[in-house]
Amino acid sequence: MIRTSLLLISSTAFILSGCATSNRAAMKPIPKGPDYARQLLPGDSALRRVTDPARMPPIGEAFHNRDAFLLDAIDESLIWFAAPSSRQFYPFENVTHEQAAASLRAFQHLLETSYNEVEFTSEFRRLFDIYESVGYDGRGNVLFTGYYAGEFLASPERTARFRFPLYKRPDDLVTDPVTGRPLGRLLARDRTIPYFTRRQIEESNRLKGSELYWLESPLDVYIIHINGSAKLRMHDSSLRYVGYAGKTDRPYSSLAEAIIEAGIMSRNEMNLAAIKRLYHRHPQQIRELFYKNENYVFFTEYEGGGWPAGSLGVKVTQESSLATDKKIYPRGGLVLVDTESVTFASGKRKFTRFMLDQDTGGAIQAPGRADIYMGEGNSAEILAGGQYAEGRLFYFFLKPKEVARFGRSQSGRTSAVVPDGK
Image 1 (cartoon, rainbow, N blue to C red):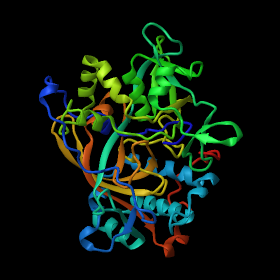
Image 2: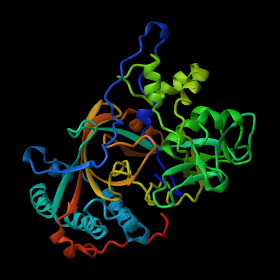
Image 3: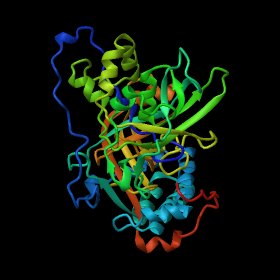
Image 4: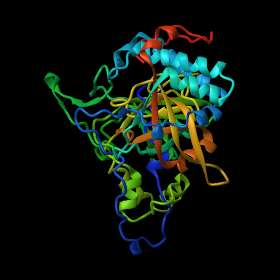
């Protein structure tokens, strides 16, 4: 999320994966898996129109799996579309701003007036053009990971217990004023160079004086960097909220892949609890692997009423908000995710849901990656930590001839307008 609220930057499951082995020397380095970070070639699109009946998404199943929170998520996207600043991101390829906003109103109207899956599916296919992601392999396969909004113990001052800072955005960090893309470190005469690496920032103490809050461990700091926001509990039980304020232009790399390649963990178990146990046994070894990710994230404090919010500046909704690469996917729109997710007791379950594309992330930088927002707290952490499955991703836009019909709200649900700049 690029926000004054929060950037839930990447999936917990992709950060930390596998289970620790007690005999590291006996393990051989594990071969690399699929290249989920594969970039598009110049001029290529992340989306392609679906016309083959065999590749149509399970629209009826997603309708069956809907819940009341989906309507809330739609309203949040409509809040964003109502802000004049949202127009700068459209047209997206050949989709206009009016068409994208009307698509949400049409979908909202269908949800509120359809009596069954058959009726809904028939009308949906009549109204919407259907697109699918090309995925990481050109065959539509996307890796879905998960993220959550966590709570951490913290202090406004450095103490013997709280010694590891979250930093405010430095004045010399330059980003594109429209897209938010980091450009580097500002020098004299408007010249920019690459920003300092994670290691350089943390080992040099060069940002001393810009600490926002102090955490208990480097692992807490790293997880907040990856999630992009946090609820912080102070010693007096009061709460503070921090969110994304910018990141460096240095490359992001996955801690999971670093651990796997080092032969410390296996790929077949993606579990945040396992990496926490490993860190507590071998903190220096794992901290050294943090530095393979040169990218660094900065934070700001904000009010908790809209927490957690995504890169659109509106609140994200459990299992209804998705994070994607906003350089190649359209903001705010309606999507369908067809994959698997974990449960607390019974292993995997089918996850087929309509969602809204409302967020982005540092690790989510390719057509083959997407992050599912799992919610707040410990339960969401478990679900996010176990989310690691391939699937398919679809986008829907109202057919141009239908846009005028849904130019205004059909349901009477109201939305406030957010200020410009989100």
